[in-house]
Image 1 (cartoon, rainbow, N blue to C red):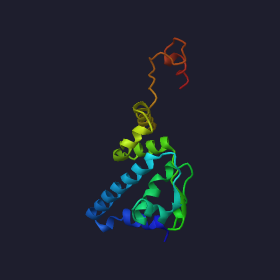
Image 2: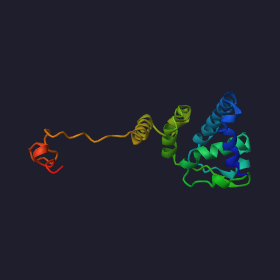
Image 3: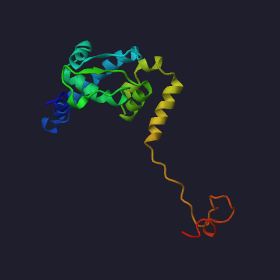
Image 4: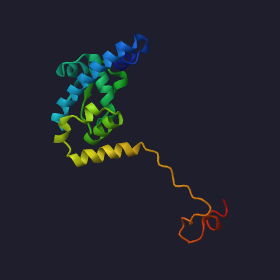
Length: 168
C-alpha cells in the first residue's frame, strides 16, 4: 500500500473514533506548523530528499511527512508523485510563495498563514492583497438583475423593455 493511501486510511478513518482523530490532527497541525516555520525561514531554498530523509530532517514520522507532502503538493513549483510515493521516493519542497500563502488561506489554516515568518517574505500590504484575492476567488458574484423599467444597459437611454429586452 502506497504511503498516501496509508496516511489517508489513518487520518480520515472515522471508525477510529472522534477523540482519536482530534488528537491525531492536533498533533499533526503542531508538527506541520514547525515544518512550515523552518521552510519559510529560507523560502528560496529548494529542499529535496526521499520521504524518509525529509521525515528525519524535520523530526517527524513518515506518516506525518506523507500528510505534509499531500497538503503542500498543490503549492509546489513541480508536484511530487504523491499517489505512488514510498519511503525512498525522491521529493522536493520547492514551493511558490504566493500560491502557498493563498492555499493556506483557502484551507482556513490561520495558524499557518499568520506565521511570523511570512512577515519576512511579504509585507503587510502584499499579505492583505493575497488574502483578499484568495477570498474573492471563491465568492460567487451574481450579475445585477435588469428589470423591465430599468434603463437599458446598452446605453440607448430607452427602458430595457423597449430596447434590448424587447425580444426576450
